Length: 328
Image 1 (spheres, one colour):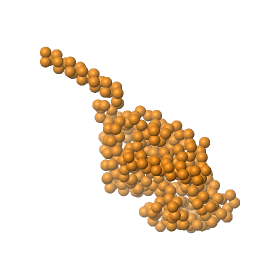
Image 2 (cartoon, rainbow, N blue to C red):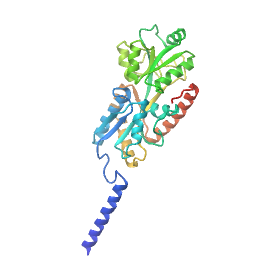
Image 3 (cartoon, rainbow, N blue to C red):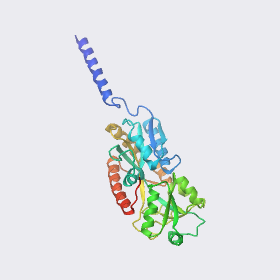
Image 4 (cartoon, rainbow, N blue to C red):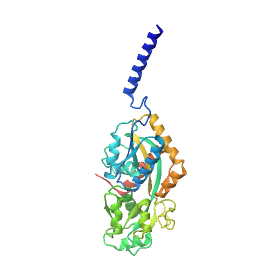
């Protein structure tokens, strides 16, 4: 009789387990059960891609599973972000998003194909960044004031490049033009690299570029740095003044890179991801490599990321309103 009872309990236990598996893709299996795809909604070789590959390397060692970087550029981050929003919420597809993709583009009224709050679960902040205003070294400009004086003398104003309509460096130029009262013409490109190439080639006068990609060209003499957009000077370009030091206090323009998962991802998976990122951030070697890319590591888990997204969304909504900028 005891044997019969034990068999019945075993059958009941198997049935309950089968029901649990049908209801949840991660129970009772351990996560990750297969390679993790880290979607980067920007081109390979760009500044955000560098962060992705550094994070993927660290997560691969921490989680014991392959982490594959999948670049899905387009529409200033909207294409890749929408892809992740529609992906299974099982923790095996993640998104490396930025201020541009999740705070600026929505403020511009762009048709995104996703909601940055409703369709994603925040995991963790990773790093923050400032930019550097770099000009064609062939121009007779040695300072920001020189550049703006040249813009005033140039019919139609100077042209500046960006990674595309609505990109952070597009709006940085628009805010500078508004604040300084000078004519500046925006020329959008499909990525920072193409814009930087045209600054170096003299097709456009300047751009706001990421430190990670600008510093090598500055050191080679192919770009001239005039100002950084952060609250303090960058250790990568300590001789370059901030916008505040150059006469424009309060004009601090930067952003963050952060990790998101599709909405509905199980809390246990989100907790495991957040813990893995926190362990990476606590490693001085990881932080040092992040700084070498021109980023400042940002501590903070899901709650900090959600609060930062809300605050930056409100800031850029106000900024876009003052500029009258709009994407259709």
